[in-house]
Amino acid sequence: MTITMTEEPLDSMLHNEYLTLQQLSAYIQIPVRTIHHLRKRGEGPVGRKVGRSVRFSRAAVDAWFDGLPTSGTNL
Image (tube, rainbow, N blue to C red; front, side, top):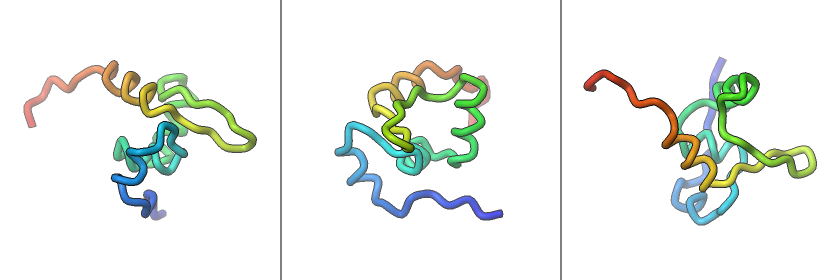
């Protein structure tokens, strides 16, 4: 199984206030499938339904990401 991320350059998506699921995946550098799993468990970023699509506010994504626990290991 191949997991692909959006081909859109990161610079262009940083100008958008709202991200698609694929843009979110590229923005936080995790697979779409992981985002689905996190959201299903109520642990992922909050999105808003627009028709059949979901959009994510970059500000809300940044707040969610900043609230995640930090790793205790030194890499």
